Image 1 (spheres, rainbow, N blue to C red):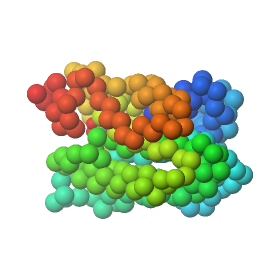
Image 2: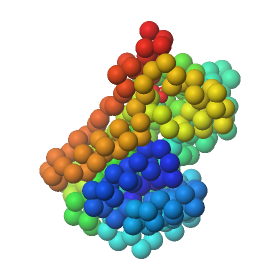
Image 3: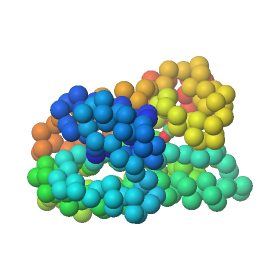
Image 4: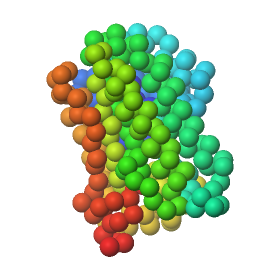
Amino acid sequence: MVTGASSGIGAATARRLAAQGYHVVLGARRTELVEELAAELGGTGRQLDVTDETSVNAFVEGLDSVHVLINNAGGAKGLDPVATADLDDWRWMWETNVLGTLRVTKALIPALIDSGDGLIVTITSIAALEAYDNGSGYTSAKHAQAVMHRTLRYELLGKPVRLTEIAPGMVETDFSLVRFDGDQERADAVYQGLTPLTADDVAEVIGFVASRPPHVDLDQIVLKPRDQASARRNVKTG
Ligand code: 8X3
């Protein structure tokens, strides 16, 4: 099951897992896109808004046994200093990244345990490991999401569920377009002058994680382009 599966890392991961033989269940707000992709992959596509409890409950209904949950839905809005933080942007980031991951994970823990060999992959970010100026709405949400995921690793110890945190740096998807509210020029500028990761680069790693034997838990994977050393240091910034 993949959240945020209509584009970017979510869609690429759904493709990869389907290629590895999984029946993929795709969720996103843009129903048409997930239905289309699911049809192509021989999977199931349904509307899912991780910020809405009713939507999450309807989505997981009937899923008795789930082997893999990919918590991918999330993102950033804005790049503002704390002094001028936009409360609505913060709410959106906490609702999607933190509470969205919580809602979906909570709803699926029984089905993951019942599978006898479950795996929870949460896509955090290098923003879950670092603080950077003007990014606190996103970095704080990603830190919180990551700590929840890492806590679950302790709480599920002894149960047949593995947990992997994937913390990517720059990946060229519509991430920056969403962050900058549809400003294509500003979004493109983020990736110009360096070679970012692609969604497929990340999906390939997730495919590797999912194909390890049940006793092997890849706890945390940090994945950056060669051109990026940290959230704010790359070949352009020096
Ligand atoms: C986004 C990471 O490096 O693009 O999650 O800020 S970065």
